[in-house]
Amino acid sequence: MPRIADRSEQRRQIGAALLRLAGEEGLDQVSVRTVAAASGRSPGAVQKYFRSKEELLLFASQLSGERIERRMQTVDPTLPLRQALRALVLTILPLDEERRAETAAQLAFAVHAAHHPRLAEVRRRVDREVHEALARRLAAAGTPEPGPTADALIAVSDGLALRLLYAPGDADSLLAALDRAIATLTPP
Image (cartoon, rainbow, N blue to C red):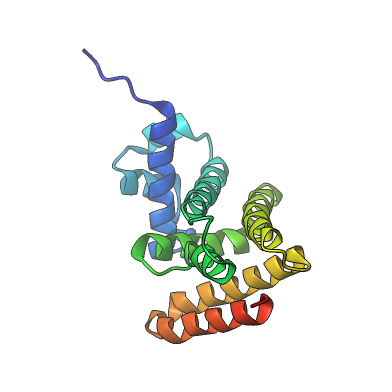
């Protein structure tokens, strides 16, 4: 009996290959041909699921956002505020190979989004989801001005993510900086 491919799963596998490729070699190395090779498919097979490189980039960016959201949902909601915020930020930081490739790809998407409105909208949606998760946790703990505090935490995590990409050996001091920022931004 012939195997029937799950279209959604095939798209996710191709999108994951793009994220790996973009993370390892940069977005300028991404093409239908290189993504096909990275996913073990022919260019024609990739085009069966994605009509253009832009469609593929949009999907991979959304996939990256879904991964972040899933990891954030695994954080124990009963943790004390500072521990919960640290755990939420850690789900985003490039502290393992998967998140390292994902962060490098996200930074490449951010630069690309400056000139591509559809990709910019995807990036803004991911940012909103992260912001809302942090703001909800802050509001639940009674933090005054949870929205601006969430923005500050995102700014800190973005800076840490960037530095961790080019200086992964500094992780201990950078995570100490995260702890200091959380302590400064939140009530005891």
